[in-house]
Length: 472
Ligand code: ADP
Ligand code: MG
Image 1: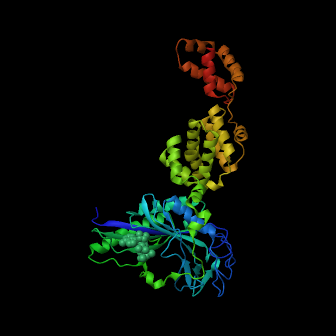
Image 2 (image 1 turned 30 degrees about the horizontal axis):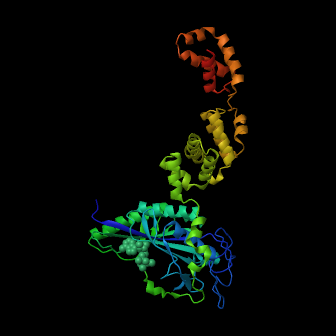
Image 3 (image 1 turned 90 degrees about the horizontal axis):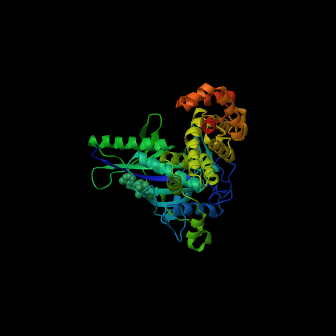
């Protein structure tokens, strides 16, 4: 055991999903491929232009704050954060410093310090040679920043927090939060200490996946331990994460906040949140549908689904939708709902893995999936056959009955029809029937086998067994 206790605080930026940018009418389209098309004089910082506040972006942040139980500002304003960089056309970023939209709140038992709203910077790409390119499509996109208290204890806990925030943003439809696309960016502040006071913090940037968050924090804790064990001091600095070498490396000595010379943005009015009806707590609450953690409890308490299966259903939108529609369709039938959960989380997930497909590529509709579940219940298809039907449905789509028929997997369950077969087998196998009546259980299996043969495997064996028992 190490004598040092690690402490981590996170700063997470997330691009918000809105039609237009934070302070102008240029499109907010993170998927735009042509550079410098979603721009205008306002987001390009031309002199004489005036910004206006995007209400939708404010609402997203207030909803996140409400979901986390934070305190919403009654009255707030924006600040200018001044610095020079080619990705910042105005020479300052409009952000919030003293007066964030949200203060406090918790997520996964981690205390949140604040959530504020700012604008994203442009995207620069450094080409080979002496060339750098700047794409201003991203400049001015609404960006939410959430800061946690220094209370996280491990890399795993840090990445779990970021995963939960991503899930929350998606479920509130506030943002897509794809880290590999830069829609969510995590910075981790890491320190270690052997006393009650916190040690010197190092900020790690360039973390572009949840795995990177976990690994970089774990590495940095170890690195700082080595530094202190050598009798040296941890330097307060910003470090990057090298994915290939799996190490953090020094980037720059951290600037102090006074370097930014923050001051209230004079071109924007104060934002009187409490005067705006759409921003009232009641209104915001009524617009928030079931939160991820509420969904987890419902799946566990009402349907008795296993924790790991719940996670698969809650984290994946397509799988979650299939399940949700099954719960609606089979409302009173918990067995059916559990069967549906099993087929989704084990069979369907397996099919996707083997086919190297993402869940969004599933062609099967919820109706078709529910139909298949009913066919299993009614014995129209065996549980073995259902897996084959599911494979085809998932990849190619179609309706469950036709696919089952096409694969020759539909079992005959019509009792009148099967009764004929059963009585034929009984009269043509008198000796086996005698054995059965004399108490030989295996004779029944033999008779069922003969009937299956007779129907070329298309009969439902459970029904056959039942009919034999009845007729004998
Ligand atoms: P700064 O002024 O340097 O930006 P802040 O106090 O705003 O520092 O904190 C930024 C982030 O760093 C927060 O997430 C906070 O929880 C975290 N943090 C602050 N001090 C420490 C520390 N000693 N160790 C780890 N994280 C810290
Ligand atoms: Mg800070």
